[in-house]
Image 1: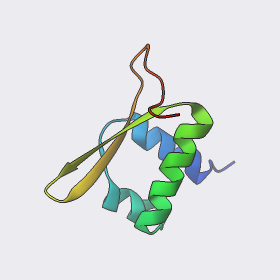
Image 2: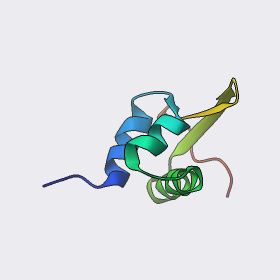
Image 3: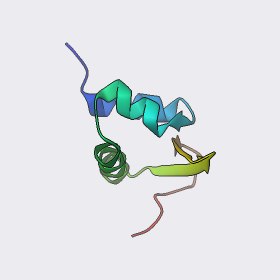
Length: 73
């Protein structure tokens, strides 16, 4: 059975820093759709997703450090 795009995205984000444009291309999403999917994953799984910007490109990863919870509300 094929895994959902959400599960595949979660695996990518857990593997380390990922460039947003590469993720959008991989999943066939526009940038705003990618950001929404990352936000939804974070909320659903109570994860802390970190973002950094390098040379004008956003990078994302899941921070699985123990003792940390999702930022914000």
